[in-house]
Length: 87
Image (cartoon, rainbow, N blue to C red; front, side):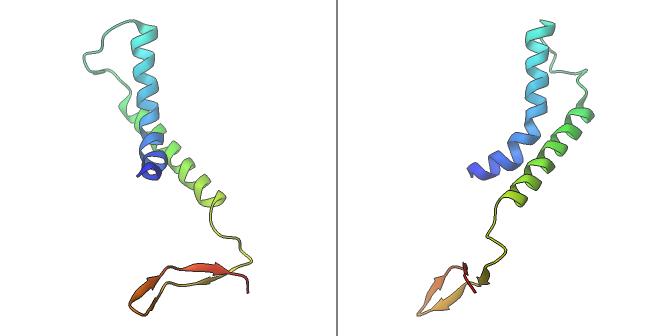
């Protein structure tokens, strides 16, 4: 659940949170729920941040390329998860 929040939700919502903080703190006005907000630009920024987050996560994690993958299997009625082993 934390991974979902960190990789999908937080990067998408971050531009909206920053803009809301900007409106509240610097402009000093109370929004009428941000009716004049640049919604499309904020959504595009959120999608770009989410894509960067997922690309970074995909490139920085995973098993080493010099290992062989052994898929999950069923032994004696139990599921043995997939692993990587030295060839």
